[in-house]
Amino acid sequence: MTNNALLNTPSMIFLILYLISLIGIGILGKQKSKENTLNDFYLGGKSFGIGILFLTLYATQYSGNNLIGFAGSAYRSGWFFLVGMTLMLSVIGGYMLYAPKLFRLSQKNNFITVGDYIAYRYDNKCLTTLIVIICLTVLAGYILSNLKAIGYIMDYATGGQISFAQGIISMALIMVIYETLGGMRSVAWTDAIQGILLLVSILIIFSVIWAQYGSVLDNQTLLEKSKAQFFRSPDISDIKQWISTLILVCFGAAVYPQAIQRIYAAKSKKILQRSLQLMLIMPFLTTLPIIIIAIIGAAHFPNLDKVTSDEIVLLMLSKLNHIAGMQYVITLFVAAAIAAIMSTVDSAMLAIASLFTQDIYQVYRPKTSQRKLIYMGKVFTWILIAVMAALAIYVPVTLWWLIQLKLEILCQIAPAVMLGLHLKQLKASSVLWGIIIGVGFTLVYMFTPSLSQPFGFPAGVVGLMLNAIVVNLHHKYIHTKNKQT
Image 1 (cartoon, rainbow, N blue to C red):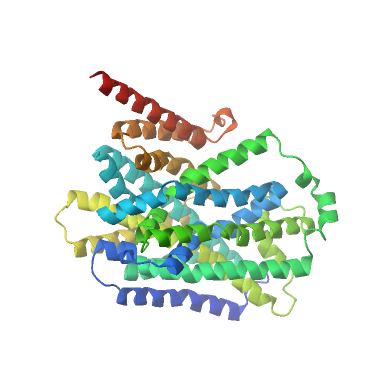
Image 2: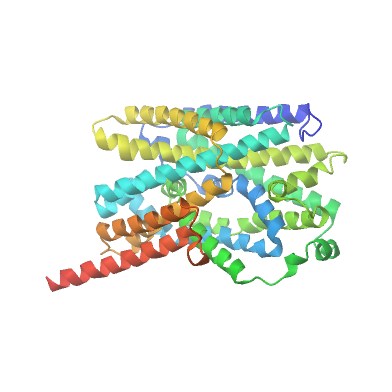
């Protein structure tokens, strides 16, 4: 093993055994399946109680980005990144805007995917197809970015013993096995384990770093000397960035297809509401500790660049490796980071398979049996993960660009989902034109390097505003025209 490996041999064995055990959960999920239907495979029979529903929502929302990306951003931004708390809370706000109403509709109409709701609400094949294509594209990018992240973590933690490519291939294989065995049950049960692991590891790591490096107050003098910019007042650029990210997260992350599937999977409306209420406290137990850790880290390691600053938590732990028992803490962190990423990737895989099965394959083969549809979904999942793993290994696209693409494009379907539940007179044509304008504007700016951000905001934010304006104007135009006739 190379000298810079974070995990020793026993730690690597533990990690490998933990990952293999997830396949056992997949087998258990298959054994607990009640019927060979899309409802049972993709939604777990809509039977999730508050424990499983809350933990699968938590694990899906808090990806490895919270352990690594948020820490790096907090290291570079300082106290300003406390807005990260607001970002995670805004996702719950986004759910509250539509989830209870959508749940009631899904129970009555047996929805499996977001495409089912769009088809039911607007009865427009063109609009449904466009939204399904957007979801498929975004989910593919989501899987790609997280596979890259998991490859980097495995390579870094093992000192190259498990390479970037080997990490991607092995993790992809484990996920696709347990998902295709037990469907949503396997995914939700593994999410529950991974969610608990994530929460426990963050609290333990926070306690260890607080004890070894001192509290924020203990490090204030160091911070004032080495990171004086942390104490400045936010300027207009900072405020624009905060507002933009808040909009993207609230209206983008809240309509993830995998999140919508979890809304459908709730046993009752009461369980759904209680699960969302519990989610309100999780930023204080997950995001806040990571931000504080990173700021303490900035006091002790003040000159890290953008790449190495993303590794601030691992760096702080590795410097304590001489302390008895610290190897266990490092192993816990690596396992939690991998688990967090897996819990988001497996959810995206299940969502993308259901969209293909329900909204594409079944549309063209309406007489296909439920058993055959599930089989085709599994085949599609294996092909998809093989392609995504290859792209993650060989295509040199940055993680941030993929994350940016995901949110800026996905938020364009928010008006279709949210407004459609509250405005009964809203027509498909209004929503369709809004999405075309919003997505078109966003893509032009994102794929034209010479263009700067419009008005200092990300293109997706301006695209969403244009989207909403077009929907409103077209809706009023149709309403006025109908009145005249």
